[in-house]
Length: 510
Image (cartoon, rainbow, N blue to C red; front, side, top):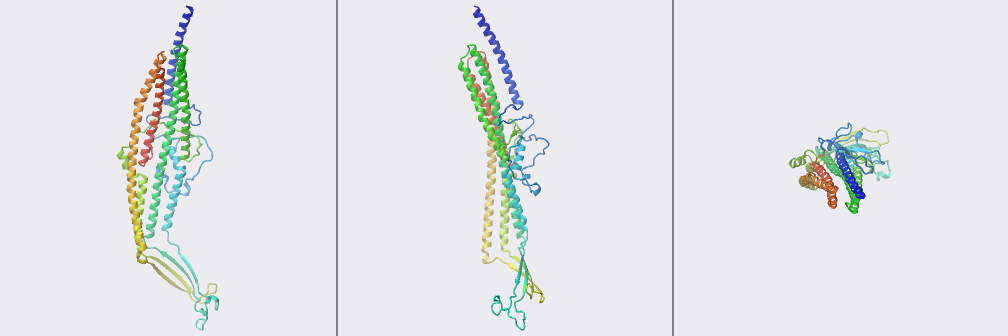
């Protein structure tokens, strides 16, 4: 009898202790969730960790915060403006890791502008093309000639009796020497048109460089949001480990009270180990994303990088499809490049037609009857010559030159139309992807995740109150974890789709 009373009292004490422990556990879970939602996790010591700093609801991706007193970076065109030697960016690669750098998406784009080797190469190519314009516009180089026709008397070069002195010409008849200067001139308008074509081609290369900058920026934005999604997955897995720790402790307490089988405790422990193993894979993915970001912005791949931003933060508004199409057709760098190439092709036709016009050459000469190394022995006289260089041989070269230029113009026109169609089609496809990502994110966030969270809480409450359904509880927990991971990926895909949509239309994603 005493033994039975003692057993009953132990169960009552155990149940009271279990209820107190559950209350503390629920409080800790809700507190941890609030902490995860309001502040970044700073306790991780893994090398691939990323600190995510959230912002207020009024902040949007269109106006991200800027560190310190740095000015807002200019648009893409400022990168490829004419650069003087004093402010020409240098191509470099850091040889050793430095201290950690904290950057948001806007600052990463700025680093991409300044330090990406591919963009630096394109900038130098543009400056090289611009340097050819004044060379083409410059006048042709003059030609200077020296003529010595006075051969020594009876020398082998006199060719027999040539230059033999006579009573009339005591010094020989071919002792005149001359200095001439020849200056060729093209028909007026040819050089200016050729230099204008070279300048237009250089500006087309500039527009191509801007388009490449936007493409690299889209790749950078994708890596940025992928890294933030990996960080969010790490947070979800940590919360899952905590929930499984709670389930494991409940199963252990129930087993000690002979209310559950030991296998339930073991199953909870296995599920917890599986969640911890998933963290290693996500950490590796995160480290790879950070290495790629460092390489893309011109840093050493092992540089320490801390990303600022929140994967849950989205734009307040995205322009409509019509607005994006109109902007792309008027401002996309790729269309600017094709339009400039078409303009250069049309000017090339005009230049080819000018080949029918003659060119000129002016020659000025001075003559004196003396040797080049002897004293002046006669009067000096001058001569001015004007040469006309005319197209000959029935205008064959000129005719086919015009045909070639016209074919180039037709090809440029077709390429411009094709490029415009491809840009508009890309904007439509990117907008469809954005809408799909937006709907999927809203569905997960508003319906599936809350439902899975409610199912998990109900299952935990029932199981904690000595009810059955351990397998249902584990299933609910696993489903909640999977949906939270899917939500993190969906939010990342949504922000990536937003960035790609704006870049496809020719905008920077902020």
